Length: 232
Image (tube, rainbow, N blue to C red; front, side, top):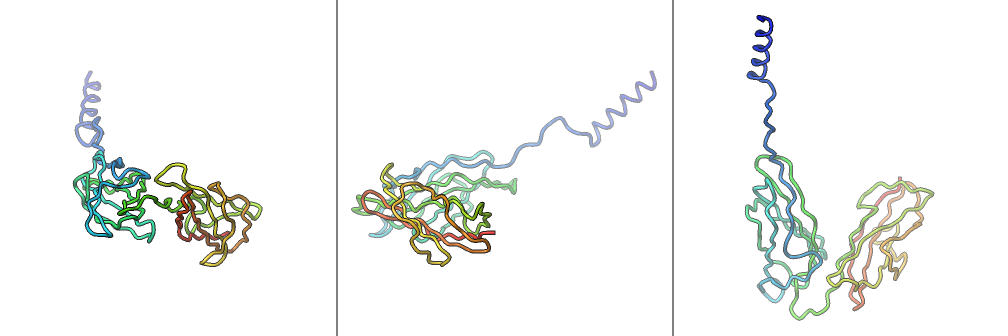
């Protein structure tokens, strides 16, 4: 009996002094925000005109669990420049942007209680321009190879892959592929309707440059910008 009492006492001491608690710690890691407006692949017509060339656009998103502040990233898809607003404690922010210009945006959720952050999906939109009735397609998004990627080419060939989007579904007509070893690559193939190009011949230990020009049915075009990759 004495031995049994002693065993129970030891167990109580272990759990009372540094033993594991049955209560799980509170999760403080923020989750990704869900974007609301401007909507994906849309024409933003709700902005307030500031001048003949600019309008103020309000960005909104849903509150993210465990987040107490946000960072807003807005990229001009023509110039590839990105503007950032940090330490946003609300779920909305207003920014002055160029009219008639395509942009992408996303939000990073942050918490003062965690070093981990969470990024939302990336949305694209056109900031409406005065009197504009036809908008060019969004610049193509390069999928593979990614920028500065080191690529292993099976049988000496690779596949180039991208995605194209526009504010009006079904208006993209074709793509031109520019490809070569020059930083200003020449035309490689024109007027293809697929968003990939198979069996592109490459040489090992060589850096290649490429870009995509997107055409729509109204004759508008957009430029993805030049990407590069190196073959192992």
